Length: 167
Image (cartoon, rainbow, N blue to C red; front, side, top):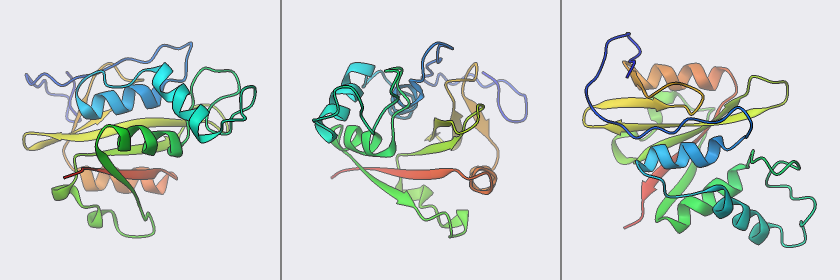
């Protein structure tokens, strides 16, 4: 798998690839952070219905086309159900204040490739290294400096959710 410096890494890190026909990046990002297929489209669609029970035809928490593109409320609900506390990182703070030592992963919502679109990516530590987990990439990307990478994403308008396992 490629690393940020271009070297190969022999560790196996769970990765899911997003199809060009759907917007299920949140499904993939959650699964990659957790290291296994824990959620599916149906799971997140059910959460959308719980959050907006009158939204059979229009639901504020997902794409009107039914292709995914879920919002942060859906992510937080799904991760809560899976035993994780999720909090927003205040991006007005310096990225070195992200509690990396005490978290189980980061879920980032970044600007997408199309105008007005957003994309979910994950970031998690495996052993001593942090990895960027993007379903639009061929595999995990080892980060040489996770704080600098978060700073870069914040400067581009990213939102960061911090995941910690509930006790």
